[in-house]
Image (tube, rainbow, N blue to C red; front, side):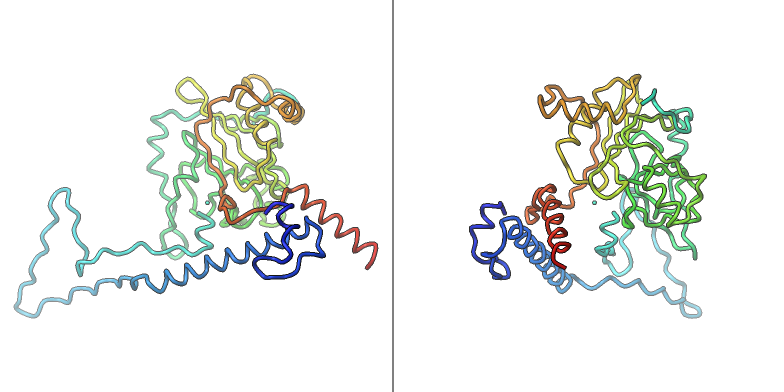
Length: 346
């Protein structure tokens, strides 16, 4: 809801609370909060209704009892080539539903070089595909397979993928920020190579007790060379240390450009920074000063030509039309004003 709309309404359309005594900003915050609650309640009702209409889970077929003494058990015929054998009982087992929590875990100098290694050839990549299956979890239970969107194309890197065991192909585990739905599975026993921002690195070391020798803190706003891939971290405008990953991957004689936003709050500055990094020759450094100049110039004259971006992994958490947040500057200003009022009149 716009500021004008919020101030023109005498009462909240959701909870019917009076808005006449509120400032336009406070009224907007109130109405948006009520809309969020209403949206969540609607989603809960839909889920409850779906659970009520879902068929019961398919039970495992009982083992076939042994044949009676003197009676020869009839052998099972193998399925014809290209035809799937039907499971016992003639029913197809349904895919287990994921919980909401599980679903959340599923949506200044030259280039700084970090642990450079020779890029893998296509043949080597193919050979390592066999090692892609995660190791079994404790107790012999199989771990969940790695989702495709967790592995960056034409690299041996993964992003926020710590719940799938030790991945044989992975030479670099990237962590976008220090929130549990992204670092889940990461702990003191981690034996891979972890790449993240300096703030996130401090949190991982101090809170999760990850071996510091396994942690590689990359400077934000600086193009780095990580195992043959150019990596630039851009502030994601989310939580302290949260970053957007910009990868430039040498492949078939050209650079593949990949954007992985992690969790972020989009701004026009992000567009200017991404275009600056991908439009700048990799032989030239990218520094915070270069990015700041790009943001400043973009405000005066938008870029006329955009470089090709091959892959975008986009955070879409709040793209639902039910979400309508005030501008970040307005929220910050409202919080500052509230704190000032509380300080002036405890």
